[in-house]
Image 1 (cartoon, rainbow, N blue to C red):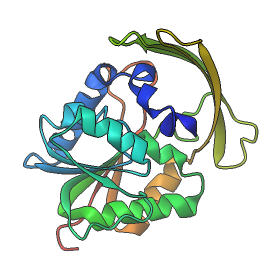
Image 2 (image 1 turned 180 degrees about the vertical axis):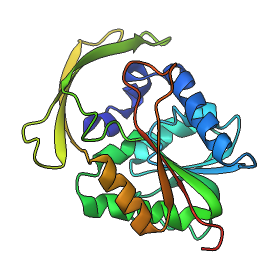
Image 3 (image 1 turned 120 degrees about the vertical axis):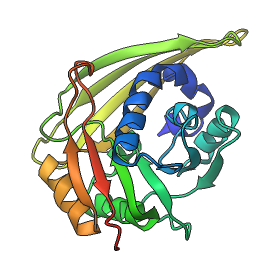
Image 4 (image 1 turned 45 degrees about the horizontal axis):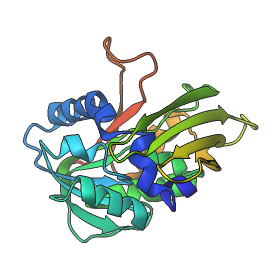
Length: 244
């Protein structure tokens, strides 16, 4: 997936940190509502650090991602945060946090075994009495095919525009596909157009709740709020019992 590899330096023109302010506040409110004294947060699959650029105002953040290029980008945006290279299915830091946060990077887990491994990682890093918050792009119940487009102009003369096309060739499995067409311009160079193909996972709400319980959490599905946008991402809040 080139967006997280050789194209990573362009990522903040695809999706800008400022665009995450409203949703990051929703995550912060959900976390603080469940755990008012939370101060430390581990994000699994932190990407370019967009959510962390807002959450770091309220929490001491440790950011983990599988892509070295994305961690480099995040370090530039969030130099005060700790960054750790690691796979959300396998990471073991040997310490726990008040909060473990997993945003849409969890969508790249396409099997129940992979999702179960990620939830185990989250449990291992959540302190007893702490909480984990999972925000997948969609569940099987909320998935909708479609197209989106966007992009940003950079202050350095670079500009990017993209088309995102989401489809589900086999609704009976646990995966769907996203095609990206990305157009990039920069001064003194020819315009570039690249295609990037992504395969993502989608699971029913009951699978999420069942696997979270199996991992040792006490989970709940967070209902959408009246002031949410038209298609808010589902959220699962999971508490690690104090005695475990």
